[in-house]
Length: 158
Image: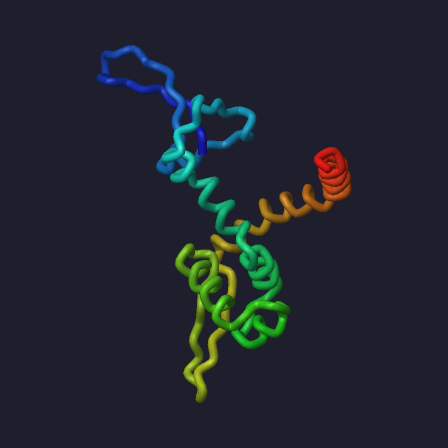
């Protein structure tokens, strides 16, 4: 996240304004428009930005769909696999493990024969649903406009 900060070299020094991407200051509020970007934007800062990291995660092929489904109720593995057409068991396992390592999904193993596993959102995962819903609402509300503009631009390129 880009933030404006004051840098003090020593307690008696005057404050100097700086602009940084920070992984340590995650309590910054405001909109993206409130933050100035350094020019050029250093790739190392962009790559380590928490916003970039989270958007990459939710923007992969299966994550958004799985978070949405798990936001409705917990699922057993096979039930979740049947609910998502086209996902292989291997990819479902990989995506769920990644979401589990991010703290968004928890996995519970039941001591049955054979063992069964249930997945549910953690409180952190639940807290992600509201901002994702806002993004989804925006996308649905503007999709026709975006598609028309893409088509217009594609027509100019031919």
